[in-house]
Image 1 (tube, rainbow, N blue to C red):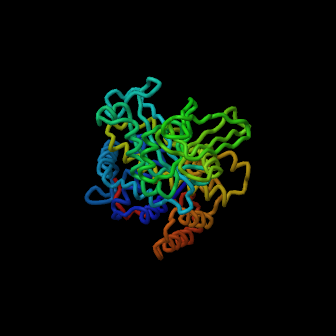
Image 2 (cartoon, one colour):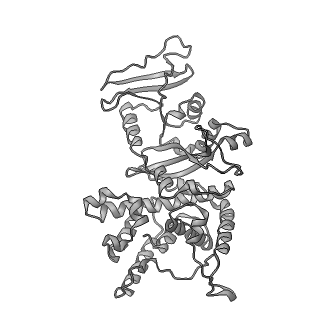
Image 3 (tube, rainbow, N blue to C red):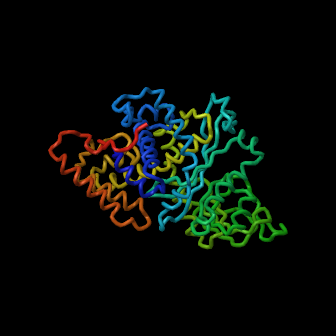
Length: 414
């Protein structure tokens, strides 16, 4: 289990806020880890109950009091959730970004404004994530929520919602390509990327899409290919209007070929990138199964958006710490195959993994190296590691298995 002190120290370097706000972020994110849920009630049950200030020092708060505090804080923190913070965590060596929508069911939320109808006729909303690959996993850097209800209220469309998300990362997309699946293969989005000089790789739909060698639609491109064949046709026109490069490849392992359109020039690189993207499907499974986003019954959209931002911060630290622990400090190969990085951090304590306290310091140090892509402020990480080492030496004879989760009550609890 990750220490709350470690989360706080990480946020002190990531978040440009005062310590009191960072403490609030830490309390909620740590409760999300303990609750393993994005349900507000479950998170509230894992927040500290003790008061530490004023005449009520030492008293315990009721669940209702904590629940109200959490709802109030989710409203207050909405203005502090700046997605640019997560953009700044992108590694210089990130090869591509992934844009991926998934449907979140909210079957009985008839009085929730942002919940609409899904394609299958059920109720829910679509969650569009933009994420960066990290060691076979995707770390989310932005979430955009939309539904038929929101689209009707805002007099907009699904396509405009997509563009709203991509506008957030325009500067990034000029340097790093974004990889998108079939639902993004439409003309106005390709025009948007071309207009803003963004790099993209989009898979074509299974249906027959017409491309032409010229913009007057005189000669149509034939989308026929043989197994193991690679076909590259540059400067063709998608539906006769938008100029793209067409790439086709049929891997004999699959029963149909892969067709991509892009504005990049290296076809083999595009195929390699898309095949890497196909292997990264973990994040949405995690948010549904490990964090139970479908159990979130928040009625206000602003609260849900705050929770999604907090989830991103939490997921980054969990995924990176889990990767470091699993691949650099666990030697049992059968154990590594059986459990994912996220599962290790959420359901195992370090003592269950036979990891001693000195090794924990090394894990935290390696995690800091992955998280802080920019040069670390001199002394900040070092001072924290010295703090951990002193704490270890102070408690070296203690039999308590929860040394690393004990907190110094110097900050405000809810």
